[in-house]
Image (cartoon, rainbow, N blue to C red):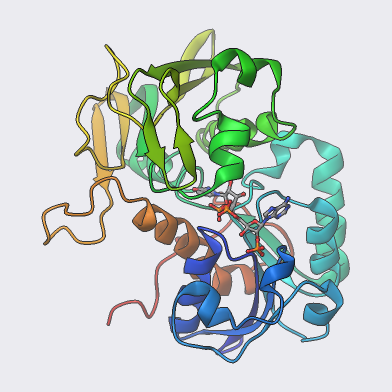
Length: 357
Ligand SMILES: NC(=O)c1ccc[n+]([C@@H]2O[C@H](COP(=O)([O-])OP(=O)(O)OC[C@H]3O[C@@H](n4cnc5c(N)ncnc54)[C@H](OP(=O)(O)O)[C@@H]3O)[C@@H](O)[C@H]2O)c1
């Protein structure tokens, strides 16, 4: 165990920039390097890219540069999980925490698991996937609540997110379809659409394994809401008559019944009609309901400040902070874990040690 771990940050998007700030403030972490995907960020200071004071760490797009730093961990927050690159880090002795989709690698099959495990063995390292959803609401919270249960009939996880201030053009428009015609989105499915949706399938598999039940299949449905008036997202326009809301439902079937369900409602507009949120003041929130003996419900919200009375309704920054910090706070635990894939079923409770100030 080291008193301090040296961390390479990979990517400075909506999540990554909050990770830089989180690493800089964390008493047991030190930002050792910054790897970027975008050429125009090369040479820029990590602090400047994160919107905080300069940190004296310059961004590079050369993997060799960051491998040479002899750091302990990579905080991986690029748009997609590049398994080749993740294995390169792991083999080089760098642990990896990521919000980019490797929450429960077992879901993808034995080949990926063995590839990651082999890289971990060679490097004596661990890999851990995390986030807020997936990564908290969809599995850590229901599993934690289940410790109060005698009998469970159904678990339902609901997320409502206002996407207007989520500034990811690739995810919002190219992949999910905000601001586009549903027929166009269906006809030109983004090459990574299924990969992204499988982020949530992994959560259901993790919960099923955590509760020791055999999952038969996952049924997935999507529904689009069209905005008559149109809307504006930070990532781009949503013209009238195009997709302003997306509902996705994942139902994990156990013993012939939908027992582990995740429902996502993502909106950029509030004129989508019946069955859609109508109030622009709604803020991003989650709930986990366990129907059983006893029935339990836990709801949680996020805000820049509750004391300011939700003045920041619709703002995604707190969710981005949560996503980044779940990964950042996990770094000491992952560095200290036995080598291999380390999921929430393997790691101890992750707490924000040192955050009270
Ligand atoms: N689990 C959760 O709760 C949760 C929540 C939100 C997001 N996420 C995931 O976290 C990751 C980061 O999300 P984000 O909101 O930060 O996304 P983002 O703002 O769109 O950008 C992420 C970064 O990815 C890099 N990038 C851009 N194009 C790329 C490409 N073609 N290949 C690889 N990297 C590319 C860029 O890095 P540079 O800055 O280095 O140029 C960009 O800043 C994504 O995988 C997202 O799905 C998870």
